[in-house]
Length: 110
Image (tube, rainbow, N blue to C red; front, side, top):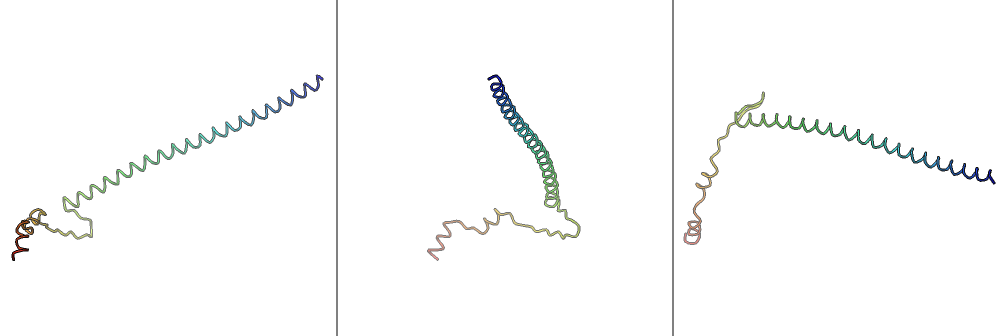
């Protein structure tokens, strides 16, 4: 009887150790995955920050070039600069547009 109890206790202990070992191995595997994802996340955040800084620099350079071209009439080598004078839109609209009542008068009486 003592031998049978010892065998049952031994089987229970081996089963418990196996189950516990499996759980510990699963947890270690999950911790490793978490570390990998955190590392990847940190790398992507650093890359994102670098891309944002590059975008700001490019936008600033483009903005400077646009201002130089528009306000100072600068040009690049090999380009031809054309200057076109435009009438003020308000003056042009006032010159072309007649008063509304005059248009109706001309439509019906002339």
